[in-house]
Image (tube, rainbow, N blue to C red):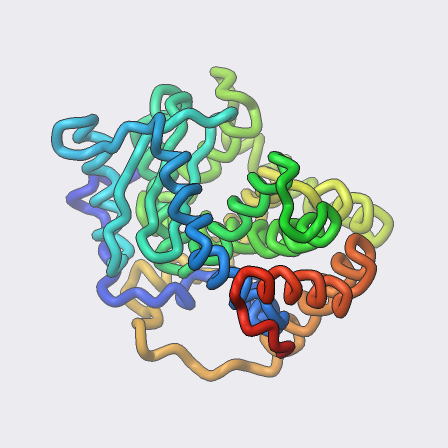
Length: 330
């Protein structure tokens, strides 16, 4: 059982680097090395895509607060307090196709919960969801996550300004990054509820559709078996299966989370031995190698889907020039 809110640790000045998964650190660093991506983000903001996207999301959503489901809003504030998130995203409940949550908004993040999530999961698991989403805010995932959500909507609408394949290539790259980011935020959720089993149970219930009577210990064992059978022949197929997904497989997330706990990092943070903001160490050679790995993977996706990195960049540059950008190559 998770501890009562009043008994849970808090982490003043917590740096996101204290809990971020190595794959997230490397993939995020790799994105920063891809030319034009930051300028695409800026252009989307200039063209008010982000603002209109948020307005569309919130048109049918209900903002939670002291008068609207104060219990859920209070859990949101508790998550912000535990992680010591400098920003305070607004919280909404709004229609989604599945039991899910999302955080969008580069300048002003908002957390949106699906109605089925609020109605279906236990109180401690909902707290884990809110910890997960606020982990995205603290880790500054919201910039790229917002671009991903906007581009996915453009693809679905058929209104791509640069053609379907270039847009699809960027979406696949961002999805690969986002799956890494999810692994970090499962750790943030664990810090918020102070119990990894709560997060594992949430992932199990999400994967199992909320069927009653499921056993979390058996699901953790299933995750262990999945990791143990991840041989060289299975990896390519699993990578291709995950390619279009927003989230890693639930069993993989459970396996990664329990490994992090087993290695002692969770307990070290709980004891107060964690990185504070402003004290982040310099980049290591190991991170540089991992970053290069993800850069190569992102480049491979672009080569296969859009016919090459240079072609993709030229198409986006043309769009930026047409819409008032300077069009310079980086």
